[in-house]
Image 1 (cartoon, rainbow, N blue to C red):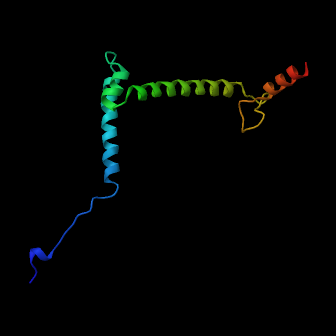
Image 2: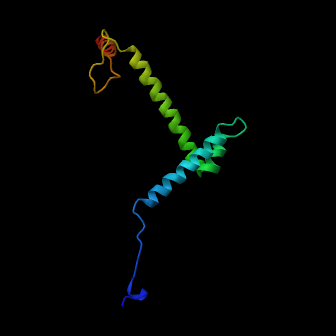
Length: 111
């Protein structure tokens, strides 16, 4: 006869459950942050610290990276607008060096 003591059941937590929990927690934190950061009365920096758990260094790094990204986008937009069939990039590995840039450099070096 089978007794309760003869059966040993052990449940294993799914491997990705912790990742799922962390993702859901991050989503909730971001939703709360957005709720407060979108208010004119609330400082985005304070919201980052309070609801996302950012340190002063994290906030500073975030703003530094935002500035760099905006600068890179502006440079990319400028050169994308100035590249035409008459002024193509010198090569596609370096689209910022346009044919006209190379011609200007050659004129300067020739003088």
